[in-house]
Image (cartoon, rainbow, N blue to C red; front, side, top):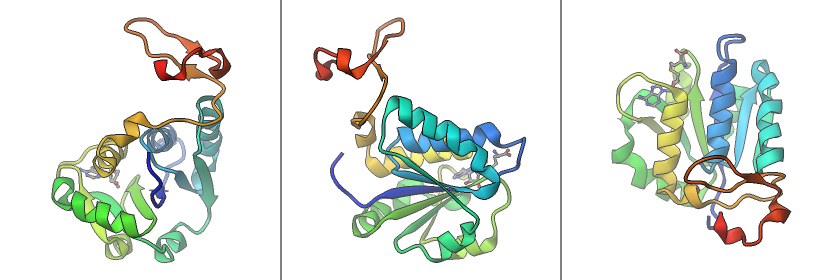
Length: 186
Ligand SMILES: C[S@+](CC[C@H](N)C(=O)[O-])C[C@H]1O[C@@H](n2cnc3c(N)ncnc32)[C@H](O)[C@@H]1O
């Protein structure tokens, strides 16, 4: 993917016990689909290791930061902010405008776990719905990132991986990157 300002996903809220896998999957989805960084609230700090472990094994770069000042990060963000919410404007209507804003500065994408403070709606430059139906933060994030990057994230190259999956019509093939004769077979 060509050089462009970074995309940071901020997971706002996390209910210990109930949200463990959801928060992990927000992180894994952010990483796999082209974001540069995940910001977690301190209450979700236990999820950092899982996401970092996947990055260590399958490549990066992808950063995970834990903060005890999550609202402060939103208030002080220097760039456009997207808040994913079923109440927002349809992604298909605002995606061009968001891409234009992202060319000018790092994009913060906020996804929730439970009720979101109204202040977030006010701080967001774009409140965006991936449909106006209730569903999942993971699904909303995946569709949003794919729209943002117009599919380019699917061809991303990964650095410093310990393991590389070689796509197969059937079966599983995972190799050490040094074993690859021809990296273009990926
Ligand atoms: C409140 S939803 C509920 C799902 C939650 N995992 C649960 O346990 O009930 C959590 C987050 O998903 C995202 N979300 C849900 N539906 C959405 C939609 N249609 N468009 C965009 N984002 C959506 C929002 O970021 C929201 O804060």
